[in-house]
Image (tube, rainbow, N blue to C red; front, top):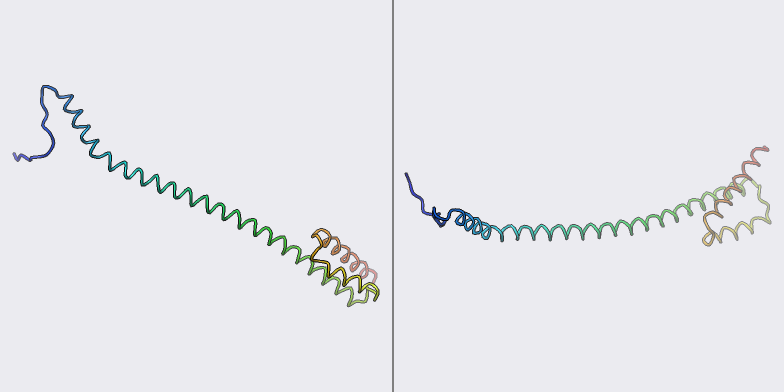
Length: 137
């Protein structure tokens, strides 16, 4: 049989339970710093991930607000272009008299200050006029 020398203390048979407790405490004292370093490292990683997540959520929220504003602007511009095309069709077909052209040009210039609902109502009115005229012919 081969005998290996170690740093582990020998047990005394007279006080076996105390020797086991001492050995367990020495093992815990040796391993505890390793676990606490890993634990602290994981805690730091989790905090960094939470911070990164909150920053990304804030960025997404800001981008969402910006996109909603751009969508409103696009919707308004789209309705303006539809209205302009319909008015152009009215002018080309001769449905608008010369006296109305000046009023229409003033209204076209004031599009920037109009609300989207007002532009939509003008668009609906123009579409109604166009459909009435073409229904008669």
